[in-house]
Length: 232
Image (tube, rainbow, N blue to C red; front, side):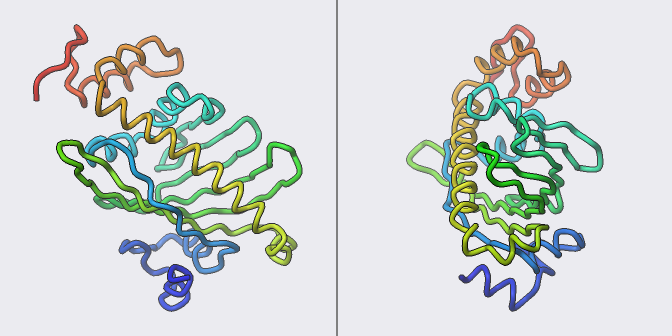
């Protein structure tokens, strides 16, 4: 409710403290069909690693596919200008674009088509989702907490009129996808934090990872060519 009131009171000139100059993003936020403040996501990790992987969506998707089988269907392809094509075996087809970025904050715009796995529901529209993240410590172990929120705008005018009927189905779809993405984020971050060297060895056997991605990973996590992690 606070999220909805804030948007109506101040418009979409800013979102999570970031200016929103993109017209398509403002359209979704100011004229949404459904808005949700999602539960806080928590996983073992550091802000440095989180920032690094979030700035590389295709690699993040590859890691998620291999480390969390329920996401094997997800594929990201770079289109340029910060835009990525996303495809999920026909259930989801569209594009993801980074709208705004700042330390510990991101705003994304997703545009495309969604079809339920049972082919009962087929919708087109746009979604804006925001992420705010921070580092927490539990003893000697660091965690990252993420506050996600989303705004969904459907293109189908009839869908707007049937929102009361569709809302439970839409919320269920959102919750299942968020749960899958949360599980993948927890696994990926755990591996990056706890055993980046072993993960690098595994990645070298994956046919869908590019040599330049492997090299970038190796340098970021200070793993020399012989596979022994450097100190520091």
